[in-house]
Length: 180
Image (cartoon, rainbow, N blue to C red; front, side, top):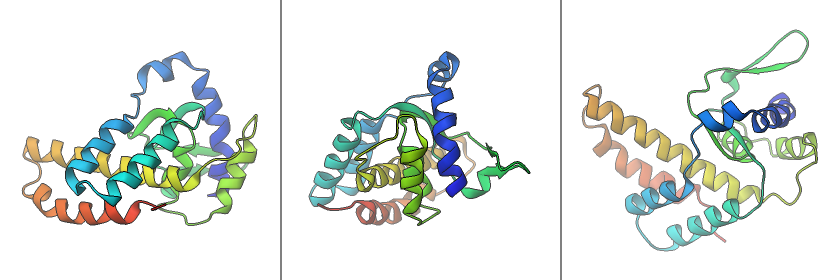
């Protein structure tokens, strides 16, 4: 995870400088993810808190770049020289750059990676509200997973998954938000 945190800012800087990357990567639509979450989990304390997290992320003024939402340790290869390579980037988007690190925390609970990420950038990031980025990354990841299940259901590849997943996802959404 430390290697990912060190390598990611450089890859994100190169992505920001690449017109094809900016043009071809879909933007991560956090407002749609929030609306979906509220439709599924309902209004109330959870919705209010998640709305604040989404607002915090969207208004943070963070650089926008490549966000690999499947930032899993098995999707990172390290060569003999210590260089990190990213693979399996099907769920990649363009959006607030720190979401990539927040997405990794579902696999790696090492808070020190945030400091490594913040200091590896040029200029370094400061005052990142990591709790909001984690909550929004969890929302976005869950929303993207729901979309995959919907596609597979409509294609006939999966049967009954939406009904089974709905209650579980509702519980997950209400647990992933950091209430303030």
